[in-house]
Image (cartoon, rainbow, N blue to C red):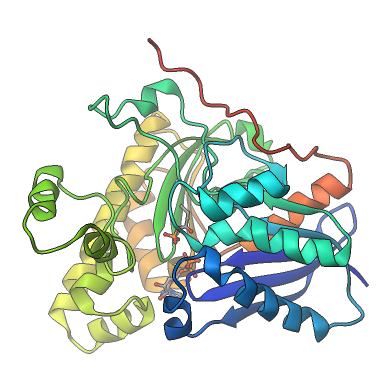
Length: 366
Ligand SMILES: Nc1ncnc2c1ncn2[C@@H]1O[C@H](COP(=O)(O)OP(=O)(O)O)[C@@H](O)[C@H]1O
Ligand SMILES: CCCC(=O)OP(=O)(O)O
């Protein structure tokens, strides 16, 4: 059977999908999460060094499905230079950049190299779709307040745009006419303003996002400068403290929000306060994104792993429903979004851009 393989590398997982495509859409044949031992992953000197290990795990998955003939492989694109939304064809230059010069270390940087390796063996094309570095910010959103630090976009573009397309369909309007606040609530949080289908603003989770299960999000800058020079942390340790071991984990020692809810149910007041604070920051950020849309979003959309929590959905909905209807697409829709991107290219509905695509970034106004 002909299928599109999707590859979404996470810190200790590689999420795989096999999809068929009939022109009208894609249908999942299989979606699996390969869990990798945390200690095994931590032993690699860097993310690039994990490539053969993860490729072998994907090979094992595919060898167990001999009837599948791959027609395309779509990987999650990583922390590249600013790019327009859409599909990019994977070539050697993109793989070299993703492996050796990404703007930030992140497992998603392995999406293109893994897709290339598996596609080469299968004799089919490899793509990335809506990478993390999709950047549609207008000039006014790039001014930070310090000329040394221009703002830029790193955002859960794949899931946010896929959910936006689905929402637009349900509202009966073209995606290009959708104004919505989309909150991706996962291990990291991105809250975005979609204006006319473009991500014109978002809470970059390394910049000013709400804190999340494992990311510290935006922090008061003066106190952070003091912490840098306190002697308590070297650069690597401080980055770990904020990114991977920050947020809920730093307060409660777990990144598993189901455990946090169990702690709250057991009467843990500290867990309750931290959870309430996360909700408070999420709601504040949704309000800020609504302001970018003149307080007239078509909807507020909640998605990502944490949106599977009825308690979280209820808490956010209670505070945001005065703004607009609150819609929930719980979980991650990234695998289907990857397959849809590849399917659009195979069907001739979209042309895959060559790397590096010209950014849409508009020049600074001086
Ligand atoms: N049913 C649930 N209720 C509450 N939180 C959940 C639930 N399922 C997953 N989560 C939380 O969602 C987060 C992971 O979100 P996900 O979108 O899968 O992550 P990633 O950003 O790694 O793709 C974890 O903190 C996890 O505990
Ligand atoms: C901004 C998207 C990159 C990403 O997946 O971030 P998290 O690991 O924080 O979810």
